[in-house]
Image 1 (cartoon, one colour):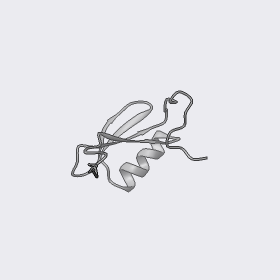
Image 2 (spheres, helix red, strand yellow; image 1 turned 90 degrees about the vertical axis):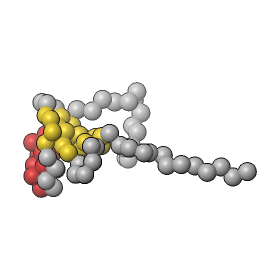
Image 3 (cartoon, rainbow, N blue to C red; image 1 turned 135 degrees about the vertical axis):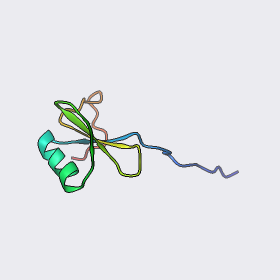
Length: 74
């Protein structure tokens, strides 16, 4: 019997993007691409993804995941 698999994701809350410098990240994602700033701290900022309630979160600090490097190449 063949099993039908549904979508892996139905909704994305946020897309986290590490940046080396918050001001440079804001200049790129907000100023160059026009994503509106929603919130900001000293190390992170949330930007609106158009026509969605998903946020782009740029951040200069990123906690390690138990020594594993998920999603990193090299």
